[in-house]
Length: 142
Image 1 (cartoon, rainbow, N blue to C red):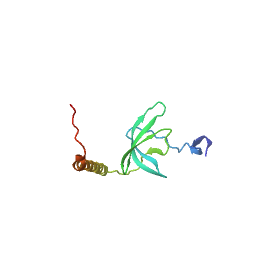
Image 2 (cartoon, one colour; image 1 turned 180 degrees about the vertical axis):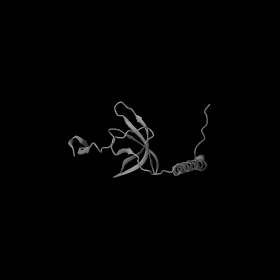
Image 3 (cartoon, rainbow, N blue to C red; image 1 turned 45 degrees about the vertical axis):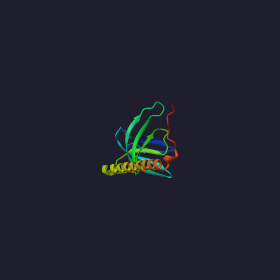
Image 4 (tube, rainbow, N blue to C red; image 1 turned 135 degrees about the vertical axis):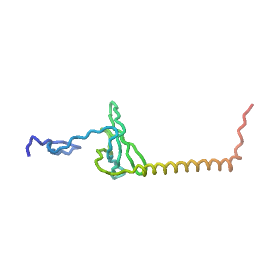
């Protein structure tokens, strides 16, 4: 191997020799690109499918905003030079994400929240019916 094609690169304190003839170009991202998001959750790392939604050009800390899917719904991650426990890479796999199943998940969440609201409203009605007489009606003083 010729020395002219070798470059030493250091990443997180680890030095590696890279053969420039086979090295891959660093990918460029744009809004709307599909990505994989690697998130540290508890003591484990999990990957999720996501989409780049914004590049925030903050003066001191430019950031990438990514929306990604978890079983519990959509989450957002901000990636910048100070980010820990989160990384992104281009999504090159052919995983098929079914839009219908994602919409079904959101619809179930909506129905669950509506049921919670109905339950709270029923509690208010019960409280007023059972305990309302304990309170004196407010009257205006003249």
